[in-house]
Image (tube, rainbow, N blue to C red; front, side):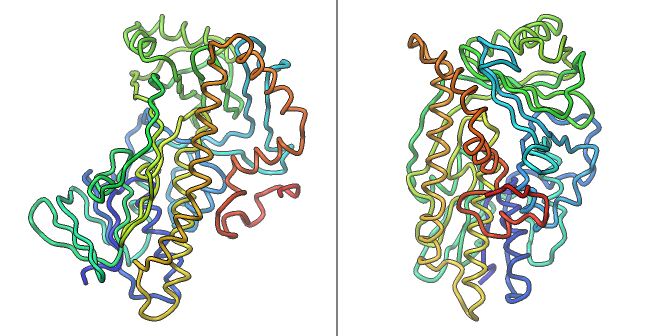
Length: 419
């Protein structure tokens, strides 16, 4: 057998799973061998000076997972944008009005609500994290896969075979493994694109994540470590193309108007990009000797910034369940009972979060008279329901739900009122 586990996809979920499985198994399964195949080149050890356009909101729960992976200490402090406040409001009201909802780290008794980190910085830290059980194979694509009672065999594009007991697909929303294993998807196109850019603001962002629900989609201004904000504007595709075509002055003015001037005037500092928004849920995420995690299993609307964190929760649950199983000498990593347990653990939460994001996006942008207004007023109602508000914050911070106990217990960073 070439490897015990082969991971297809060297993005956040794939690398984190490989690193975490090694960390959890190291004391009792020292001979474990894991390979990560990635079509992309190896991650650079030194990041470019300019902050990348694609960023993610990492929850405190995901930070705990990254610490256990050995990746968090490798993230440059100057590339981590912590946010201590979150303000969500409806376009018919003000950011501090009756149609707004606010979360504050100090009120929750925690240090931060989350962290804005660029994609490449996170991948680099995971790629270069310490460990001896993980073999990284960049620039390699699989061509075919066959699974049998005792092993899975991959054939690479160069003709080489690789065998393992378990294949984990972490190869993104167009997952090759998902398609190769004949797994279908439930898909919901939003008819929107997300426009992304970084901008300098006249007023400081005050370590706050700002999100305004507009009539045709949400706009977020996320705090970067260098004082700028990262824009994620989800809007109808035609509007997105208009925004991409504007000159810098007109684009800055459009973002300023759409954000209600909450940070004053805004000046673009980077080129713009846009990507299509589609919700996608795999019909199943396990089968004979394979499992799907992260975007290969589910893709959701970015309005709450939970996509990458759902992927890290997949990582934590599958790695924990495998590590417990592998304590038994000679245990099979591709055991069907373990894979079915992972499916049960993650299916409901992933589907529920996806549906919730779809409903939120539809509710705030609904053409039905009164529905969008009611949704806006609902933000203000939730803002005054302390128990519900605390539970929403706990889930957003990755401290509730189907995750291992060590993810919920963050070594003292969570607040005393945490459920």
